[in-house]
Length: 248
Image 1: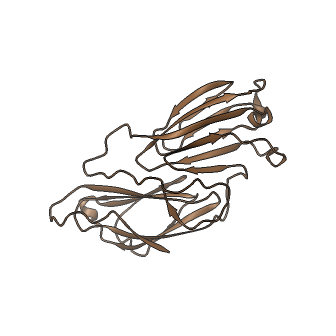
Image 2: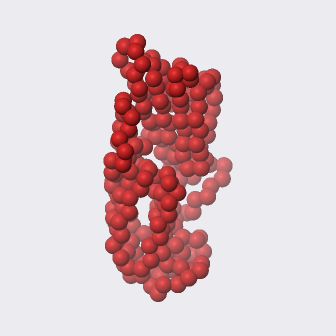
């Protein structure tokens, strides 16, 4: 289990000083992250706290944290720390392991990085009846996501289970935008994670989407003392390739 200090120590001042920082951990699809609190010196009465979130998970913690273990439900886990007093902090350890169960499909893709390309998959026999394919995008915690893409070669618009469309879901606000027909589309997120879904009808119609995503600054300025999230520093992970734990 790799140890990591969450937030570098502030100055040697003994006066209160607001500080926030975040540590994101990203793994290939089909894995989960297990995080253990090795040491904790948080001052709960001063409002210091540890936040953990990911897809389908949100925890706000303080108190006696040392020795506690938490597991994500998916391949993404973000730990965010809010500090008030110099010298406070948390030492975390984490590891990854195969998920006991997964809601991912074989054609799903995970993208990490401040920018990248989005391309719809080509229909294969393995994709028949899977219910569509998805691209998951994760960027630094304080950033937002912009997507610009061109949809072409759309077949006849149908309804029901064979409907041909592209949808984009904001994992932060849970807002979903659906696009029908051939068009150039532009979309922005509220948070740092997005999910692009190509419907089964889209794949069967041999439609195509080609585009790019990049990061945007947050809409609102962080509180004084906030630190920007770390840059995403490793290549996109596709499918279920085994890799050592990484932060992004």
